[in-house]
Amino acid sequence: MGHVDGGQPAASLAQRSVAAVWHPCTQMRRAATVLPLAIVRGAGPWLFDDAGQRYFDTSSSWWVNLFGHADARINAALKDQLDTLPHVMLAGCTHAPAVELAERLSSLTGGVLGHCFFASDGASAVEIALKMSFHYWRNRGRPAKQEFVCLRQGYHGETLGALAVTDVAVFRDAYAPLLMRSHQVMSPDARQAAPGESALEVALRAAAQLQTLLAARHDHIAAIILEPLVQGATGMAMYDPAYLRAVRALCDQYEVHLIADEIAVGCGRTGTFFAFEQASLPDEPRIWPDLVCLSKGISGGYLPLSLVLSRNHIYDAFLDDDVARGFLHSHSYTGNALACRAALAVLDRFEQDQVLRNNRQQAATLSAALAPLQSDARIEHWRHIGMIWAFDVREAFAGPRFAERFHLAGRAHELLIRPIGRTVYLMPAYVLNDELAHWLADRVIATLNDVLSQSPSDADRAPEPPTA
Ligand SMILES: *Cc1c(COP(=O)(O)O)cnc(C)c1O
Image 1 (cartoon, rainbow, N blue to C red):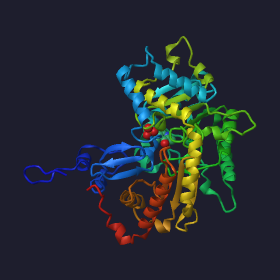
Image 2 (image 1 turned 60 degrees about the vertical axis):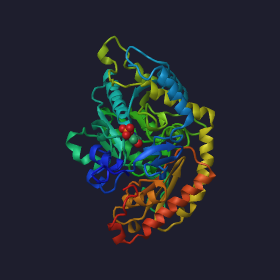
Image 3 (image 1 turned 180 degrees about the vertical axis):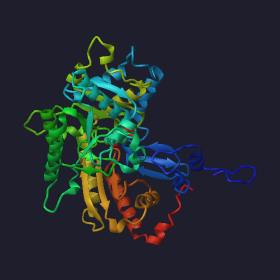
Image 4 (image 1 turned 180 degrees about the horizontal axis):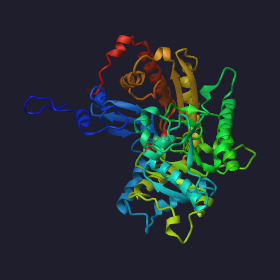
């Protein structure tokens, strides 16, 4: 940290940041005390701050990074694209990265979701899917179908439309008067199981509640939106895939669109490229949603990119001589060539590196290394799927400001980790090996032990962030 001539210490990058940058998802008054890490470099799963400290990025920077930071192959693809065509508008023009990406994603669905609409962030993709569904029914002569169903504990982003189908009080309540009304139905979250009840039974109970709503209201309902298999942002709630099968059947029966928000769970995170794939039974025809939203991992954590895949019959409903019956939604950077090129490099990795198979091996190693937690009396609801691990610290042990204290204790153990409430989770990039997996498990357990051994008075005196 340098000094200016007057002898005043120069402000650190973190201090300048909280003065000038309005950080997301942050109470800025608190940010002046718990300063952000000033990251100057990334390599693989590691981030390096301006004091030279390294941190393992346990959440892949809000779940976007798939193959590590500054990955050589994605870098090379982007450098090539940068020198060729960084961006061109996508109305009246097109370019190879957008076309190839749309074609390759379609083929990953066996051509069932054959049309790709591009946007930039996840919330925009959700807005687009909601608008498409509503407009589809209008074009089909069913204008009364204008309501949406979402799940308790669901998260779909924070623009006004996406927030209207999101169930996070702290994000939502301040804006409640601005939001369209949606129907909220029971989450299939397996943690709700009554004594003796299985995850499957919870899923079927949740599906039965959805059926009650659809039976009464389907003439007015356009779509249901859900996160397949894992409700991420509200605390990594996992559920039985039977729920997805049941919802698919109900949507067919009641003529309601099924929107799969795969923004967090797509791109291999749950063990299949699309989480929804796990809804199909081995001996039966594959089932698919009507609309799929992708973002986060699709560009490998490099550039903002999101997209909506739609089934052919939805797309067909917009074909007309009347311009206004088309889907006119647009935004400036739609289909950005650099972002699409990054996504193609991501898809190349899936094809060339047997990513899903390697992840299964990596996951088995990390699960084994984390096994002591499964019988730890201080935690409950140990859960894992694909490349997501989560557990809840019991309320009696967590203490005040648990998430912040865990985050700060994690920094001292070279972890960048941000629990959601009492839920600690890991969503590492797909770059683990045996050594890293054991290191990571040791550090998570050490962090947990540190935090849970702090006395309440220690908790009140929050540790100084190491970058201060
Ligand atoms: C992150 C997320 C979004 C919103 O994406 P942004 O790019 O943050 O707007 C929507 N849905 C799910 C399931 C998400 O995890």
